[in-house]
Length: 104
Image 1 (cartoon, rainbow, N blue to C red):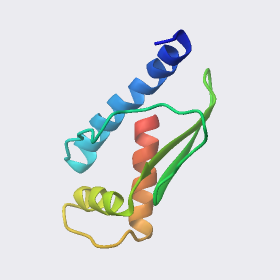
Image 2 (tube, rainbow, N blue to C red):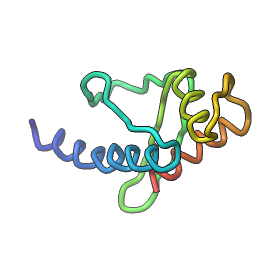
Image 3 (tube, one colour):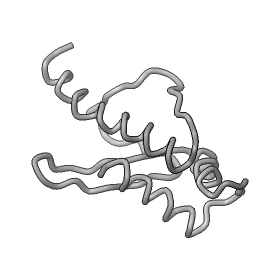
């Protein structure tokens, strides 16, 4: 692995760890990877629901947490402790707040 890729991985790994911890605490779910992780520099490929979080400080940029609609509904339902079928305003807000917590 070249040093630039290794440095990018060092920046990403804390987000993965935080996502696991936040989702376990806030939604009582265990995160499992479904396929290999990959890093790209060829643009963004967001899915149905994306939380966009600006980052400032020593490192500046934008972090995207993107998932399918079904995944977002499932995470929101887990947070609410009941099955939900749609992602309403409260659900969209909850997904955005998860992004804030993970990034923070």
